[in-house]
Structure formats: C-alpha cells, structure tokens
Length: 365
Image (cartoon, rainbow, N blue to C red):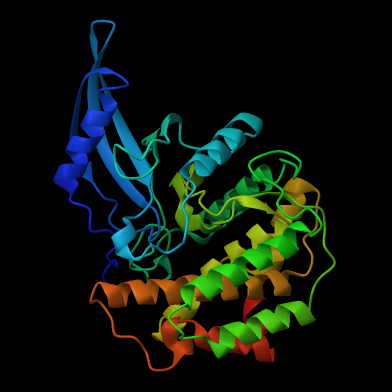
C-alpha cells in the first residue's frame, strides 16, 4: 500500500520560499533537511525542516514543522483550509488545558510567500501509529506492544480527548453561524455541504445519502456542546512510552457534543481493524471497544457518553465522504481508476452498509 500523492509542489522551490519568508522574522536564516513525513496525513501538507539563524550573536538551530494547505491543483480533500483557525485552536488548547500540543512558533496569514497561509511549530519527537501500512496490519511498535501498554495508550488517548472537552462551547475557536440551530445540526449541515462539493461531478453515492437519512431518523438527545478536536484518532498523536506528547491535526476543529470525537476515535480504529479482517488478519480486535472507551472517558471526565451508535455511524459517514474525495484525487494523479459503482469510492462501504442494516454492532463489544 503506497502513500497517496498529496502535492505537486517542488520541494527545492519550497525550501527557498521558506527561507525567504523566515528572513523577515529572524537574522540570517538557513533552511535545510526539508522532508515530508512518510506515513500519516492525506489532507493538509506537512513539511519538516531544520532552520538556523542568528539571535543576539548566537547561532540558533530549531527543528520545525510547517503546515499549509495542499496545492490548489492537487485536488485538495477539503474545499477550504483555515490555517489561522487551526493555529488558534491549538493555541487555545495549549493555554487552557494540560493537553500536549506542539509549541507554536509563527502564523503567517499572507499568501504571498508560499501561495497560501501557513503556520510553523517546533518538531516533537516520538512515535505515531502508522496509517500506511495501518497499525492493525502488524509489524509496528503499537501492534507488537504488550496488551497492558496498548491499554495504557488507549486510556491516555481518551484522556486527551476529555481534556480538550474541558473548554466550553462559549469560547473560541468556533464562530456561531446560524445560532438558531444546535452545534450538532450545524455540523451535519456542514457535512451535507461538503458531500455536495465532493459529488459535484455528478457521481452521487446512494449509500452515503441513505446514511444521512438514517441519522435524521435516529437523531439523539443533544448534550451541551464543547470544543471538539474534530480528527480525534491515535494516528494524530505523537507518543513516548505509550503516553501522548503532542496532539496534531486540528483542521476539523469546531464545536459539537463530546460524542463527536469519541465516535470518531472508535470508528477510525474500526476502519483499520475492518481492513485487517478483510485481508484475513487478526488485527487488534480488543482495542477501542465501545464499553472500554465509555468507562475510561467517564472515569477521567465524570461524563458518561450517550448514543454512541449514532456517532459511530456518523463517523463512518464522514469518513466515507472523505475517502470518496481521496479516491477522486487518486484518479487525478493516475493512481487509481474511478469505480463504476459510486458506493465503491470508499473502501468501507460494506461496514457502512452493515451499520445501516444493524448487523455491524456486535463487533464493538
């Protein structure tokens, strides 16, 4: 399984552009060792580099990570990328909670330097559960860990989510457009708009549209909204000794019930677990089980999550839209052919279908 192409930017040019921009911030900068992480992330571009500059007569060296939107010619996953919003969400979480976020260095909102706004963080060392190949396929540090260490990582990751949820919905980073609707209703409306953007080529998915109908028919009682990470999964956390040291990827941050993040975290593991099982592998079937997640979250937060079947199916729907868009991007880069069945533009169509007919849920206990 190769990492799908995400950019057409020339990295030699990008290095020169970063160095030119940094000259407006520090004295005598030199940018070197530019590289792209090898495994995770298919949306925003992540670029790692080393920067050296002079500061009060002393040469300073800093290992940096730069996040910027994908090139507009590279069929981006999302229609818009608000880099300032991501930066401010991380800044808020870093200031208001003990959740570990990478130390922020600079936010640049002027697109003249790299063609789009971007921000720079300090690089944090550690391990990330791989997406490619998925950690459930084996032969990686998490899969090979002792069960008690896997559970330590699971519980610590859930505690991260609970920590983010300490920030009430009355605080940034969300602007409360359409205040007459609840945060969950606004979230679903945004997902419908995103789906319409993805299928503007006319290739609509009957299964995705059936899932939207299921959500409306099974709408839960809505708890108060909190600040939501949006992309709450272990593949977006850097770990050392099975403990989080940096929480990454805030492009989907917003407001919503706590269960939005918990359903996403459970399902994104199931997404990889289902792939492993479809290929005849055992995977990690005892990881991120629903009851374990609920117990762990309630223990650290005092709040018992509700209606997680709804939020897990909603996560599968959201992932279906994202994967359908990624398939289109792979077609754009010549890495795949467009399936004749629009429901096959996302690889977990069997799982989503089983959720809709009710036969899937026994896997989660």
